[in-house]
Figure 1 (tube, rainbow, N blue to C red):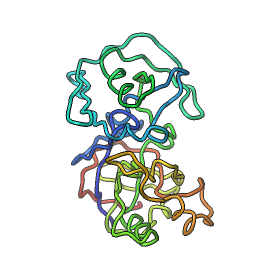
Figure 2: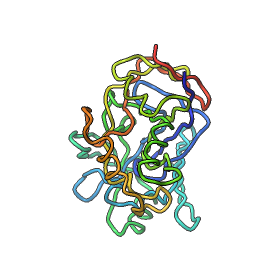
Figure 3: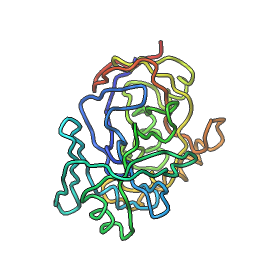
Figure 4: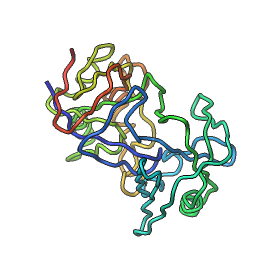
Length: 255
């Protein structure tokens, strides 16, 4: 049996990852995670893979008050009530995702920071990368230790991998053995569906957004020959079959 090591989310896809004591896991994902995302002038998703500087911006979405606040690098805040205007269909990886344009100061603030014209949009529901089958994600702290050993460093910051839940007390890569199984996660039950293949975002320092650790080369060395659902695997994505609250310290075990 393992326990929940962390609960992490980001109200705006690509911005800084936030840590919480607990989260409400729904069939569509972690509540208030990725409620917004940015698109470019061609209505294509923009994230930290191409714009690491986005990770310097922290976001808080107060859903009852319908307010969104950005804390910008240097400490300035940009905050207002969320108002929605025109519609668009965003290119979101391999999908076309309907969304509404968000009216307010956030697009200009982040465009100035990124040096690129960006627009903030809000889809109807949360926007995980792998839709419902990948509504949430799991990564063991043992896997992080194994990667740190491979890299020859003391530790690897879990925020590089932007996973909802960390799992303490299980063997490295134990999450790989849970594919297709029902797994108790606090009050919720999930079924891991596949491995999370990694990209250049994981090479970036989660505080600065600048590349400083060659995680991809390390994963290729010691995980590249495995038979997995995606290349360079690290952690798993999962569907949610029983929604519920998940708290740091809650038990985690396959049923």
